[in-house]
Amino acid sequence: MGDPRNELTIKDAILKAAEQVGEDGTGKDGIIGYFRRLAKNDPKSFLALVRSLPPGNSAQPTDAFKEYETPEEALEALRKEGLILMPPDVGKRSL
Image 1 (cartoon, helix red, strand yellow):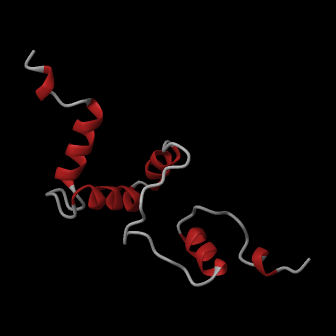
Image 2: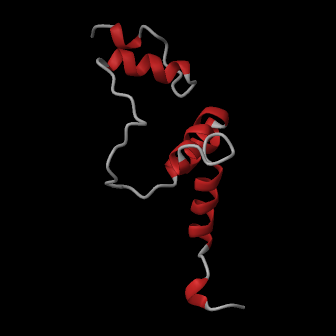
């Protein structure tokens, strides 16, 4: 084995590999690009990764997140991605 100070942890190696692969396989947009590609191509794995984040993660938002004008618009986007199974009229029902 080499000098332990020069060895990557498994976590560091995973993050470095994701950064090198990027969105297009050649490093485009680094780690953000990699996670964007993962979210598009394998949403189940991406959501499992998101669920594995520790609660209260206070990381600053990036421009990779879209802001929605209304809750209905956000629900529709989730529905289109298959992330929510609520019928479209649920948010419009009055109590």
